[in-house]
Image (cartoon, rainbow, N blue to C red; front, side, top):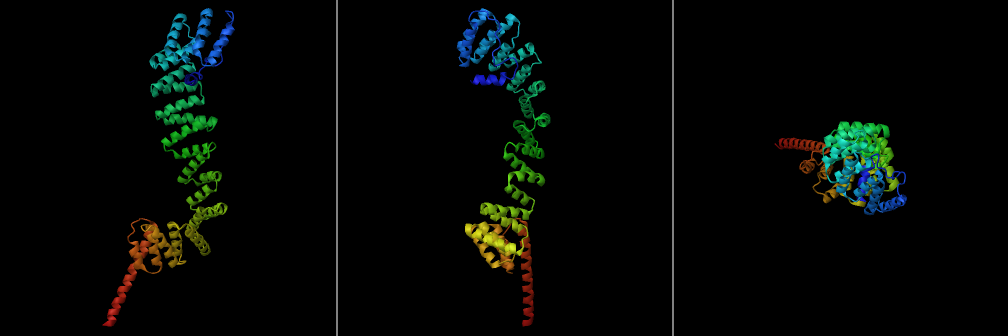
Length: 423
């Protein structure tokens, strides 16, 4: 059956090798039809060793070429490649006639025997160079020899004779091997305009655009492939987000769902819209991850005092439920930074530090709490160990350092005044 599969790959793309049996013509011997039916039954069961003698008998008695071509075909399926070559050559020498079916199986047999130069020679010398089979076999042999540069010539001609998708993809694959991306793109884009985004054609375009780092066109093809599978919409969406093409991203987000709209609005820094979606998703799913996201987005949106208090209440609920260091620090920092309850905020931050004592963000939150209480020296002793280059931490460092320096200057002045009074 593997041989049959192979012949379908190579043979059915050509004219002249029909699956249907050709007309036998006028009967020459008695019971000729009975012999034919018997041979066909053996063939249908892949018993070619039994059908070959029948065709040999019929050919000997009638001299009809069709029986000889059936002998050659059956020998090929029996993997008797040497016999196919020998008999085909003998037939040609005797008749000087090129029977298309016999000739094609001789070429197939030579390829199976890896006699590539012999096969190419026969194709060039004996076969019609306007026939699709000539170009398909020449290109196939050259590809087996890894002679891609010469194969391209025959593949171009093959595609010109029969511009179907199979011939296009064979040509494009070799052009890609040769890194002739512009030529490959020209063929593929033309096909795309004529027939739309057929899956395997667009997959070739994706490969080329990736190789060229052409993300704009890559996203466009991904979006077209989204009709086959939503995962391609996601890939296009991610590229649009990276390229800040938010209008295009929104078009896909509306197809993909509210999670993608949430992500889009967050990237656009439209925190109010994003927080509204997060809260909507929480109310719909009761998933606490959405509630946390709502709190984060609302905080970035400069909330009102009322919104802040509601947010703190929700954060405390999450922190007490999950006892998570991130949540402890988050609620603590909000209480400190927004001057809601600094001392309570410090308690939460300490809980976070008990879980992760080396976390610089948590250390910064603690220092910021002491700063808010006016304990600048204590705050400086805490924050000075942080080497993390973070804009928020750097800002806190400067303010705490300035506060500490001012405190020391004031202390120094007070000491001098006290000494003078004492004298």
